[in-house]
Image 1 (cartoon, one colour):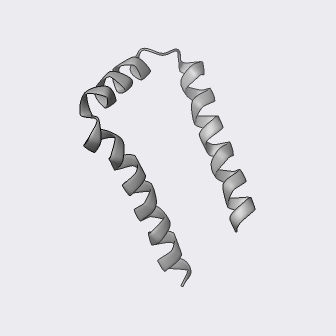
Image 2: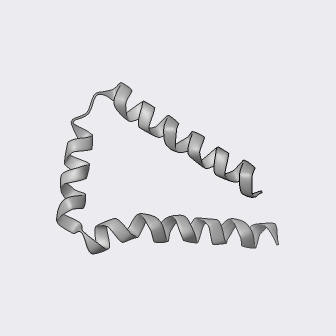
Length: 62
């Protein structure tokens, strides 16, 4: 059961990550280009914020 839930979570992440490039490929390309020119600290803060949001969501719904 736990593995099935894990795979469902992975599937949802892939689904959500794929919507941007599928529907808005040009905007997605510009976004990645802009992100690649950002300072390393900005990218680390963004990653930290995403991880924190994920942990909060897990705590709330798990």
